[in-house]
Amino acid sequence: MFYPVAKGHSAPFEGETMFKENVGTIDRLARIVLGVALLAGYYFNPNGAYSWLYLLGFIPLATGLLKTCPIYSIFGLSTCPMKK
Image 1 (cartoon, rainbow, N blue to C red):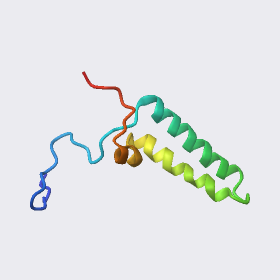
Image 2 (spheres, one colour):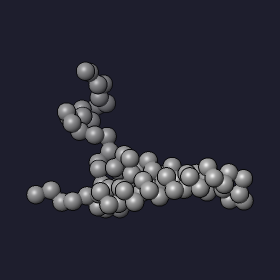
Image 3 (spheres, rainbow, N blue to C red):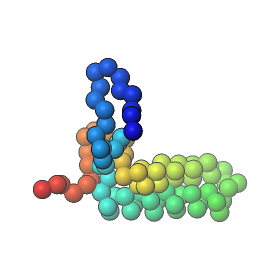
């Protein structure tokens, strides 16, 4: 498949992902559980005073499912196990 590449940029290599994985297994599971719990809170209490805050559950859910966290990337953090 052909991918157009801007001048001065390299084409993606086979198996290379757009975002580097920087969320480890335990961190990932915690994010998924937290995201699902917050979204369930919105489902069961949609008319609460601050129920819109439950929708923030999409953030940890997405970062857990995608195995990448933009905040971790900014600060150079990773909870993934070190490769030998």
